[in-house]
Amino acid sequence: MKRIPVGILGATGAVGQKFVRLLEHHPQFFCAELVASERSSGKRYTDACNWIEDTDIPEQVRSMTVKGVDEPLESPLLFSGLDSSVARDFERTYAEKGHIVISNASSHRMESDVPLLIPEVNIDHLRLIEKQTTPGKIITNSNCVTMFLALVCAPIHRELEITSIYVSSMQAVSGAGFPGVASLSILDNVIPYIKNEEEKLETEPRRILGTLKEDRVVPASFPISAQCNRIPVINGHVMTLNISVKNSVPVEDLSTLLSEFSGYPQKQKLFSAPTSPVIVHKDPFSPQIRKCISHSMSASVGRIRSCSNVDYKMVVAGHNTVRGAAGAALLNAEAYLAKGYTL
Ligand SMILES: NC(=O)c1ccc[n+]([C@@H]2O[C@H](COP(=O)([O-])OP(=O)(O)OC[C@H]3O[C@@H](n4cnc5c(N)ncnc54)[C@H](OP(=O)(O)O)[C@@H]3O)[C@@H](O)[C@H]2O)c1
Image (cartoon, rainbow, N blue to C red; front, side):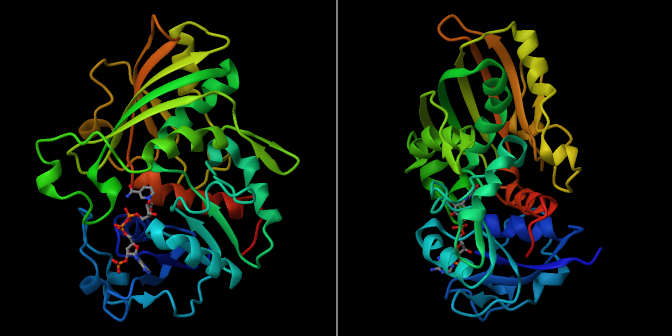
């Protein structure tokens, strides 16, 4: 198969670096262009970027010159890890120039004609791009902690109808990008506030689990109450979830429902698709960040039990820059092509 040249916007950041790493051995795409701010443009990638991955910078991009956002790009497909303060205008401009932009930023996620896509959960929402009038299109993936909540809640909502969710998150420092939270603020500490995060976690899952009606998404009606905390781990978000449903089943049946969950990427055997989008752990000491999330595209869930106040409680964990960002965007691009859309 001839590989498609792709560009990475925000290539020097935490998510951009994960794109570089994941693209190194991707069978459909190869990294042809790297884009970042004025601070980095014109420099060799190795000089522009403070590489934080635990593998070497791939040979192929090492000496590539970083481009600025004002330079024309040739790649038809762009993966965006742009800072959200600048993503809105730049991503729109690239779509106007005919590029397909797969974005990690929050800027366009809630726009009525932009899919907020998790292909296992709402592949039908991809159809929203047909409403976009620009020559190129914008597809978004969710906030990093929303991703794991939505993956776990999708089969539960489909089968049992969720009526409310309470969630408390513990989120890694890489979720704040590079250099992110100052070490003197986060080491030996928990910070009980992440700007705009609770708002995203209370709205995005309802859109993702919403229903496509006459080419618009009607959000799921259940309320979500979220509290988000920053903790001193490098990668991996964890959350405790309390869920009420309309039609409850025994805990064992809920575990089976989650472990058997599967969707379009699994059916199509897409390259970035995990075998199981949700991995259920029986050991009460799981899931743990150091032991369970590795470089995984799955959500890990454990400690599933019934609750005296709501129906169920559980712990969920996942890798924020893999399934929560760059890996999710790659899967979205693979699903876009598998659905027969062109570049
Ligand atoms: N980190 C995560 O776990 C995660 C998860 C999901 C979604 N996201 C979202 O993904 C995006 C990237 O996050 P990140 O954590 O990778 O952030 P980051 O480490 O701060 O990287 C930001 C990138 O944007 C570039 N940039 C900043 N200002 C720019 C400008 N004016 N023009 C062009 N490029 C500019 C930076 O380039 P320079 O290096 O040249 O400044 C850098 O490449 C954000 O929208 C974030 O909300 C992040």
